[in-house]
Length: 390
Image (cartoon, rainbow, N blue to C red; front, side, top):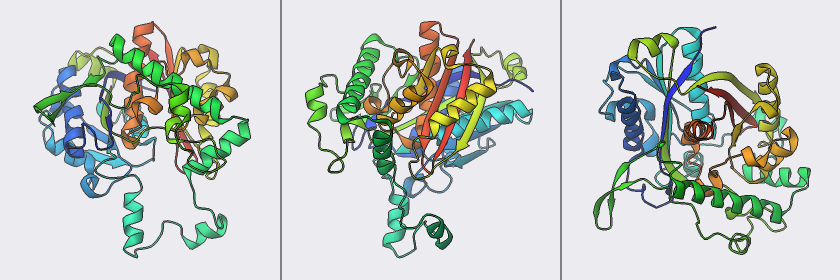
């Protein structure tokens, strides 16, 4: 089978809800990362065979095929470049990456941009469902689905609490993990570790035009006391807003190409795609599937967890990476080394390619060989992508 290579990966700095990116239309934010990755690679935009864009809340300003609209808004891509928008919940742009790699590995396309966007300020989480329900247009849960899962409203929050109980965690453990996420993200920011992956976004600041380049959600002064003071989401539970991912605005992109494209366009590969895995499991506990998807991915790749130098496990809720480490035997020193979504934010459909931008650059900085990325997704699904740094 043909190989697929990553030649660049970029992201915006995260914007808090109502924060610095709140004034940017999501289509324009997505267009900015598309323009940046084309400019940075030096490739002719007309050579891009497709754009695959992840987005979860495809309504309002993210409706009408947001991927195609981003291409049309881009300056460095001609209108001849097609695009498609996909929703695999939190793993949407990780799936974009896997679809892009599969297209290249199949030999049907040579240059594909995998990307993602989510303005959680402008298109709030759950709005595409709640607005329809409010207008009397029905619920996603069909009679047959209700018959199979009677009385169950699928909830990521409840799934996270179920993981806490199943694996014997407590709030102090979750809060300690959250604190470490902020500390690592702060250290990465101060050391310049994110400089190569973050592209500047033009915004209107209080004193006029400026550029957004710094992740907005990091709490540089976080302590166990400040994290522990945040109200629990449910009485008797362990999850709070402080040990869960932050609502975030952002966009990201990864360019994936064939060996022929490397030669034709004079591109330098950063990494090779080693394995693409996606699995489905229990939709009620929901967020535990990365554990079992990782087992499958490592087996298929002929690797062990000890062979992996760095891993990005999305911090949707602190118990997810904690359970993943417990199950796989993973080393916390290799996990989310520059912090995760608890500190940096989780812009839903943009998080997959965002994490890959961080993983590729972290592997390069540390001289590691193999990297693994996984994230939990609504419905009990998980993607795993394994790469080899070149």
